[in-house]
Image 1 (cartoon, rainbow, N blue to C red):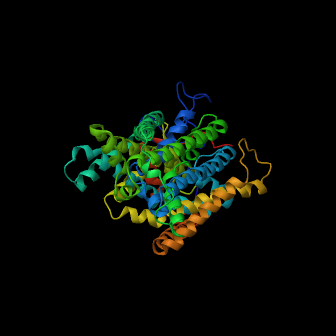
Image 2: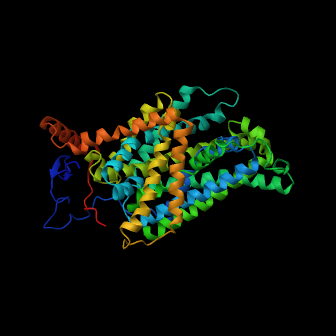
Image 3: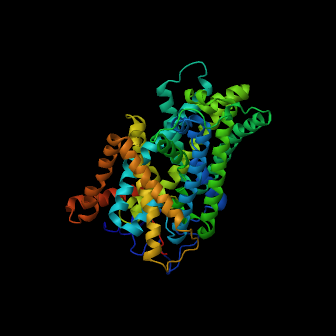
Length: 503
């Protein structure tokens, strides 16, 4: 573990004042009048928790191209079954995380649970890969979808210039970073608004689809299970696409410490969110098939746009705007949640100490938010982002599977642990098996990309011994590191959290 910092505060004149107790300058042993403690406050209510989960799960995929599932199942009926099964399995994973989140009341999600059960090395590798590649690349990809669809109504008759997409994307990323740096309340309020926009967009598709069913437009459901037979590899791949579309149910666990009454709020928010998303996804796919045949869906690059052009006339121009807002919500929810992962990892000594500091007035983890900004911009204007995500997609399921397997381990290792919410053991067992199955599938179906991802992930092992275990670093390095940290503290106006973290 790295050396813990000497706690400092910033005076009104902008100078650092050391204070070993981690408290603001006191007057006669009391807090200064009107001075609030510098901590992350519990501002996430049930509604905000639901908006974080739904708003992060529902991105561009369900609107743009759900053909990955259909392509690998070979029939309409089987594709709808896969969407339903993936929703139920994702609910199992979410319920497992609800138990973990109410038993281990720390923010940080996968990282925290792996650290608690398996120790610091695998936890560090998890956050290492997330910080350097996975999160910047994932944010850049969903942001590019935002940029493309926000510009779509302006370029109806012609191709959208790639430079224009990247520039508007850069603006969107900047807005998200500023929003999450300035206020927890405003970022969650906007997330609620964007979640309602996502649900409105889904209803815009579902309601006309139901009307089509009432009119008897069921020709595409006749012989629903006929068509091209799914191959032995096809169904697992369809399953993989479906699980990817539901990914995001774990983000509320990244911010557990900021949730009001987490023992009740976390499980309830997870159950409501997963029920809404699963029903919404299945009905959206049903709606598509009321108007578009399986063959036409496979040829479409933006299924929601094709659907709306056929049924909604001029109103179809609103659909790209809703898709863009949906992407923006995923960007905002992802940055809000993952910044807490970096904050917790820094607090544990696995990332630079600056990332565990909080803005003295805004009470946001400012450094943990903006650390993503330069990395995301580099990804945005660099090479093939989708290849990077393919390289490392297996890492997500590997570590999620480990975290859920850790729940089973804790049941036997710590049977007396306080568990306000408890799930039957078959739920985490089935879900962790599913995660490891998807990891094995990626190794079998694409050994080259997965192998590269595996190598990238393994770079976290020497990094752990170099940056964390090796404590005999040169004095000039330690002095330079301390000077940089103090300078950035003054510039960003951040200090360490005042209260020692207690459970």
